[in-house]
Image 1 (tube, rainbow, N blue to C red):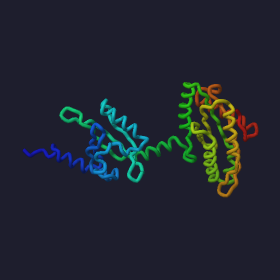
Image 2: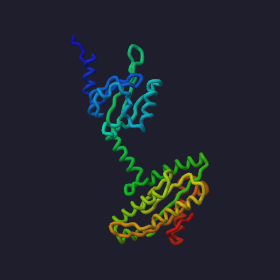
Image 3: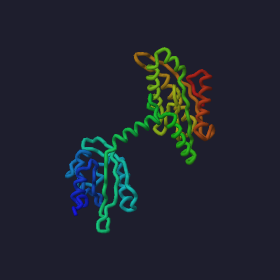
Length: 294
């Protein structure tokens, strides 16, 4: 009988060495004791450079703790190990890797961990593009209506739990149609992008500026102390929008009308607050525009 060529160490060693995926053997103290030659292509580092290092030596710092926790859980709790993380190449750039790990036993005792790792950077890039398309406005790059409702829901949960205040500012540009009619839609689009940038500079980091569509925006304000804080933000917005815009050699002047709604007195969910802020905004328009109805 011919010997089975696939049941010996030589076969598996050749298989590991020829694999485009990265094969790693790690001791229980996280030291790399084996790494396949594909690391030269995948990680731009030679096996000799990596052997003896900690397996997480070059993992991006923001992902390091998550990786270490997953590895400990695999070793001590036999929790499945399947994790995506960023890896720092020698030139400082980042790639996304996905590693699947399993425990290695020898003579009925735990000897270490085996990893199979592959580059998923292209997949992550496509995933991020899909998220961008789904949750962000394509013109201004602001969060869109869908993401607004998600963030509003999360903010309301926190406000209810910690007894915080929350407010919405609903903003509509005054006579925006005249800009498109007089200067063209390209100028109108540039104006919307510049308005979005100015609005973003008017709020704090915890707050969110969203474009609902057309020339309508909403600002989600969190953790303010008193109504005067909303007045200050509103005044900053009015000043920012009414200042001159220079677009394609044109001096553009525009104003906006805003309406405010407060949690909990004006509503307890996002739709109620949005409707109340929208109604208040129309009151500001009826009062002469370039104003806010609080």
